[in-house]
Image 1 (cartoon, rainbow, N blue to C red):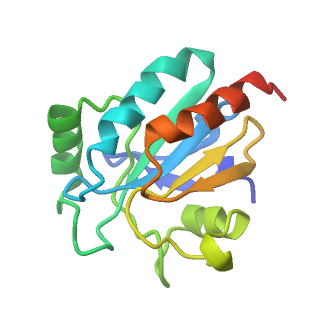
Image 2 (cartoon, rainbow, N blue to C red):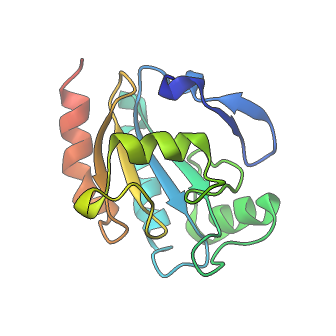
Amino acid sequence: MSLYEYEVKTIRGETTTLAPYRGQALLIVNTATKCGFAPQFKGLERLYQEYKDRGFAVLGFPSSQFLGQELDEDSRIAEACELNHGVTFPLFAKIDVKGPEAHPLFRHLTQEAPGLFGSRTIKWNFTKFLIDRDGRVVRRFAPKDTPDKIEASVRKLLADRS
């Protein structure tokens, strides 16, 4: 199944797919507004603003699977991201990113880009997957990898127009 065929819900509850992002480079991130890594929202937003006109998008997928560090309602998540972090990049409805109920998108991402020692699971909030313009997962970044450290990979991917 192509990355673009996975059905997802927007943070506003609308069912869609990732098809609108076909042809763009993407950074898909599992987020949590109450996590210690939440300051990365600002850096992710900066990357989005800097490169969106060159065919790049950040897609945020909230999850509360790691110590319950996400708000309960999608509307509250959207509000917190906007007010506290200035997020304008696309956010999606809260999902599971690991375990038996993991969203198929994240099962796909972890199969395509295993973590440390070949792990096929998400270990924590703010795991990031860099996707090329053809929908291929080209790199996985750990939660501690800040947007500043990822920027060179984004620039290179955008320069390598496939």
